[in-house]
Length: 434
Image (tube, rainbow, N blue to C red; front, side):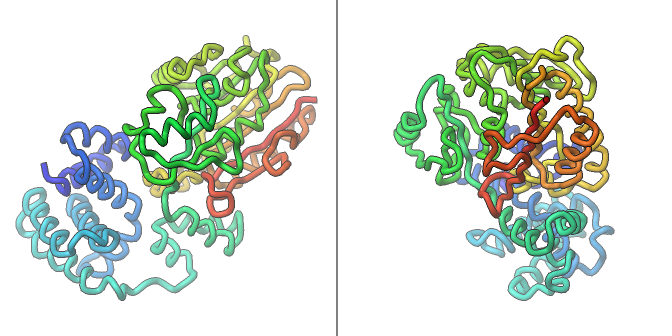
């Protein structure tokens, strides 16, 4: 299986099955046995074509004799794959990108499309230094430049203003390097640095969070032996600071209402020094099994799991907890740099979320003892899911008040921006039950 053909087939599967690209990528790499440069090239083609799809579609439309809506989906994926190589991969000869795309069109569509593909891609190659763009500064221009939907850019303008939006767009152009959380049950941050160095992995300690290490290059997960040994786990700095905000202490009772994939539960357990009671809830039993296996690998034994829909109260937990974390399901707009699929969400995907988030927050609040701590968090940048949910909660729950204790920068409500803080886009708010 040639790498380009494998990439095309993966793009087709992602489109037809709504499969997440990371899952498709992993299964395809195993299926075809790609290693080394082939694996890297394949990964770049799949992720890059999905990430830059809006830009690619615009450019194809500029050079196509018919509107892209009338081009059959299979052919569009072949054109996107070829255009991505021409526009974004400097080390790939344009001629190779064109010729291989023509061959793909012959084999996977019909021979009559070959001249069409050849003409469009050669024109893109010739004109790539001078592609006509929409009016500079417009939402359409920013959409094409950053390959994000216009509705999202418009929403961010409304939320944060034009100047901040452009800085934010610049901040998510490139996926950041991986961040690790030190498992303090097994080693210190200094010891983990040494363990990584022995494996040839360079890293730097975070200046925001004493539990975090930032890798200084892109490292395949398979090469991180420290993960398999339970010396650490993957967690962004903003997520680690969210855990710090919870403020869990040894011997307390803590509930994580939406725990999967488990990182924040693990962090809370480490803050508790593996002493006390931690209950991790989630809607999906299959995902909770990963939380259990992750806790075992890390040496955490205070964690128990239960399948539960967070929008409904769990009666046996009401009034039992010292601290509750509601890290609610969200649109994920803060992690777009890491997850290219999220660029293709629609406003309809998001509109129902604030009501669900509010119900989860209210149920989480019911689990607290008087004087208990409640933390609400998302990995999105959207005031409807963040500040608006918090404002509604405080208005309707006068027994709760904002709390800045243990919060980053001492603010009871905090938004982390990739351009400003160098983290995922993230939101955290903290309350105390009076």
